Length: 127
Image (cartoon, rainbow, N blue to C red; front, top):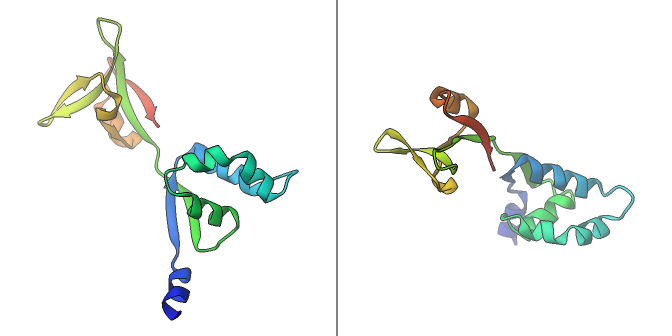
């Protein structure tokens, strides 16, 4: 029983994107509806958050042990190649190269991305 009380005191911090955080704040405010109605109306969105339903529901119910914060926005470099395909900058053995696969693109905070930007590459947000 003492262990359970101690577990309840442990604070959990989850990082989410700005758009997820904004939507959670809107649900939490539940203007014009009850919290249950707001949760029911947004059930699909809540299920889509990869953190887990229990943590999200505890946060929406104002559990002080659960905190959500916006994770740092990441960026990547992209360009259109000669064939008209969108390609992304990546690195192979420390050398900049390109890939058509978005999931293998080099992503980093804006300051780091700006170091690699050239006229051929465009900066875009990585979601």
